[in-house]
Image 1 (cartoon, rainbow, N blue to C red):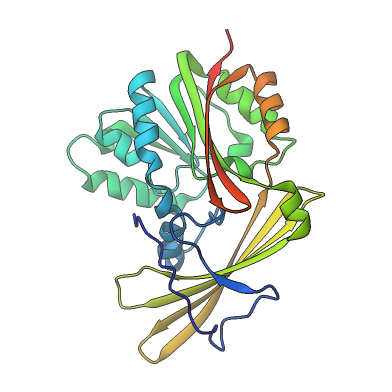
Image 2 (spheres, helix red, strand yellow):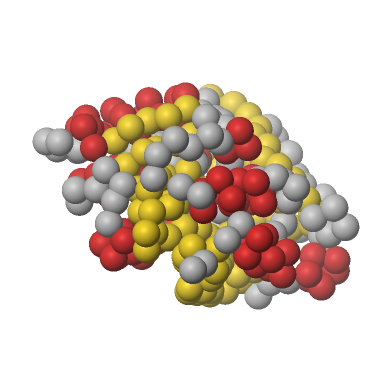
Length: 286
């Protein structure tokens, strides 16, 4: 995984890279403000996926420390290519990795096989959609990292949270993060656009212009990624889209209580002047 995202400004998008209507700004250093891509991707998009999630890799330390207090097994929901599952397995935890994208699970298992003795044996890969989740065992720690909760519609969140809470063992915990947006800021600025370079080491140069479109009434977010990939004198264009839900903190905390969970720890920090990253650790209510 990459730990930094390239943010060098490009003078202008190339002819094959559409200009969004909003002003395009260079992406800020560090974590990008809520641009995680949640859609299944092709092999060509692996570099982009890793660039979007790579800056969040520091959360591995938080989740690993939590796993050491709860013990295993660990349930990694929306595991992707194993950003958390493989490191947790390397540290001796049994992990069930759940993702809807078959190709991401193949990447995860391939990495696990190369990670060292016993790592692959500690991981179970399950292909399933979070909205149709049917858990069959107990876990000490459940994770929804990388803003996976924003892929769950508000009307489905209570059921998903109850399903998870019902399969947490004694002193177990659910931990997840999400992107919190300033409500007034969304109304005033419902469109945002960023440009950045994807770090690649295979001879291909990749530039991306991202546009975020918010609907503050429906609490929806649509993200479009306009991509230009160049190899020597050849350039090609591509596009990827993601649709997410804007999480309302009050609603989320109510849904957690209804599911039988209480917030034991809440940490947050600003990604930019209008966007925060929030990490919640929840326990089963006694």
